Image (cartoon, rainbow, N blue to C red; front, side, top):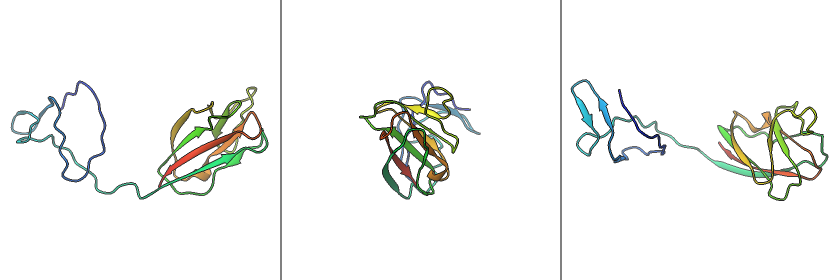
Length: 140
């Protein structure tokens, strides 16, 4: 069993070694400290993101949801344009940006968040103000 005082994440490549300040774990033979002689046992899954795509979507008419394009993906980062005048809301086909009856995740100017989804076309964006935009970055 390993005991960690702080969690830090880093994507490793095959054969890469992390030298933490002190990590202790129990293996079948002894209690060990991580070192070059006894590296922390970590399984690195081979493979990586195969691609990145980006785009901008404009909500021409507030109250009319716009579907994101058909892109198979693992996750997508969605960010509200920095010049938006009000909230844009991300959600399913039932997304509503209006404060009264809002459905979905509201983002205000320059706010963004990751969404794990298998295809960007499962997401829709609506806006409180016509002409507001989102930018999105897709990891395929």
